[in-house]
Image: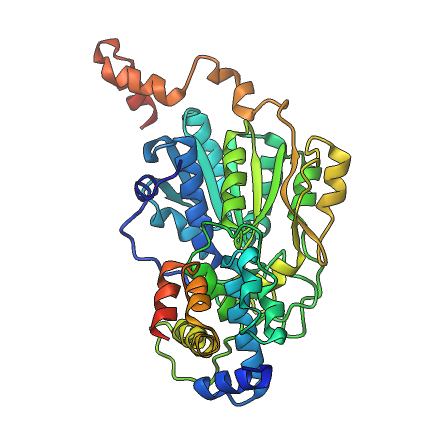
Length: 143
Length: 294
């Protein structure tokens, strides 16, 4: 899968209005993956992941932080979420972002994971899966 | 060796209301890891907080906790430490609570040197009140109270602490919980006031200083860096924006802690004395003290 096809696939799954949004989302999720994936494993993905996206994965650490959990993972993705104009679901009001952001972040992980999985072979996919924090691993499996 | 069972000893049943992705989760976990590594049990420590998102932390731990009014955890913690020097006293609050509302207490805790570990959840914004710029917000930062961008220079907590005489100054990043736990361990072991400024993204109200923003800028201090060298520490304390150092920036293990110099404490812990009197009514002094002071 080439770079443009990857982005188009993410854009279609997420129904994003622009290619740019697809770029932001893909970059954020892959940067989060880079936080948990040992750098030694990154190059084995190069045969399937577009080179333009390998840039994000190459930010991986020699030894990923063993305490990096699902909250930190979602924190990386949340930076791309901009929820405005939605209906306020909170009791106190003014928390539009908080009300929607988590579900949106999880959905965004799902869109990118789905596209990523379709580009990887089973061994490469397993390599990523085993390094994800528990609840993110489940999102990956369900994608 | 840390096990899940050990960490669970600090779990509380309170419902956590932090936003998913918040750096506070990593701080909470790192504190639990640090306490577990040091073998400090819940009853041997006190966590004091102020007001703010991060100041809810004592509620999310099975530990002695005290939520004070805004900006006041340091004097309350100092009082607790004087009353019971055997207690491990840890203050946790945000950048607004520490450096803004509680700025005066921060300065005097630095020079006073009570044996308190001070962990500041520095997300460069007031989160609980929905996003106003804080003392550490960068110049130009747009928020509800700075719609044209903050026109003030940010406070550099590490530099201020160094100038005010703090004896242990460190900075860490919520995105590196292992590093954070290791720094907290060293801070608790330090005999005196220890400041840990934790760079902590607010995923909801601060869309500038994200995990990615910090990751691109932070670096860990070199292995041969000497934290006892005050001149080196001063140079690192002013590093901000493009390169932000993480680690123990300054430490002075020679300075005596505040409570070690209080003459009234030479006879021992006040709390221990009161408990001793309480257990021995024959002394009659406990009732006398109660009548006198309560």
